[in-house]
Length: 132
View 1 (cartoon, helix red, strand yellow):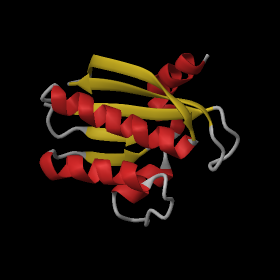
View 2 (cartoon, helix red, strand yellow):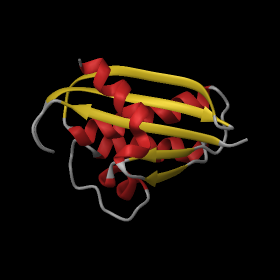
View 3 (cartoon, rainbow, N blue to C red):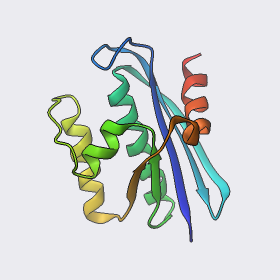
View 4 (cartoon, rainbow, N blue to C red):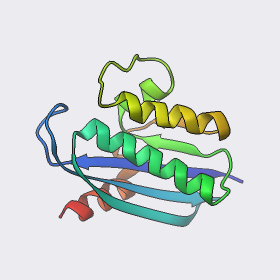
């Protein structure tokens, strides 16, 4: 079974350290067929926090639906590199989000891959529609 999860977060704040109204969007495909999509508001968050929330939501959707070994696609270099252990997480607001993903990883196998923004267009659209 081929499971692909496209995740994106959006925040109306200006810059990575500014809080704005935020949302996340997730689209899940199994064997190239859409099986789920999800969007929700997050309240005030930075863009990086919203990106993390999107990945967490995607992982929870997959684990609850018994969709095994998903590939998680995100356009966030911060999320992809921190989750994959290439970058240290120094931001105190992101540490609990990273720890949540690490806890999920203890029970559930997945990969996180950074991709260009155009690759997660569907999740981006869902997240932005929620804010509009």
